[in-house]
Length: 142
Image (spheres, one colour):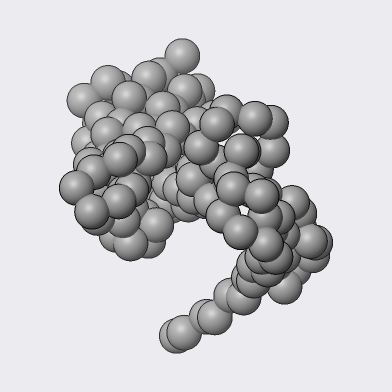
């Protein structure tokens, strides 16, 4: 089975004074603006790292749901956040890490089983497999 998803980006102008927009085929993003200031200077607005973080959090949470089901559990709730780190390295910039934090309410699961299932979900998430960065996970039952 192969599934292709499409997204696009447009850019006009130079690096610092230019403007870009991001769109997805689903319409979830439609010419959503991004630029240098929102990526490198902390100005409000979206950027590729934020979008990667959202994708990683969503992917991991779905992988966790699958892994829980395979282990005989079902979450009442799961909330995952991701912090994606962009750093200046030799030769330019690189995404060096994605730190996932999961807070979950899962009836009947013990801490050891939860940790094992979460580690497997982190490793099995397709977005985790895509990244060549350190991916950490702080998973907590609440």
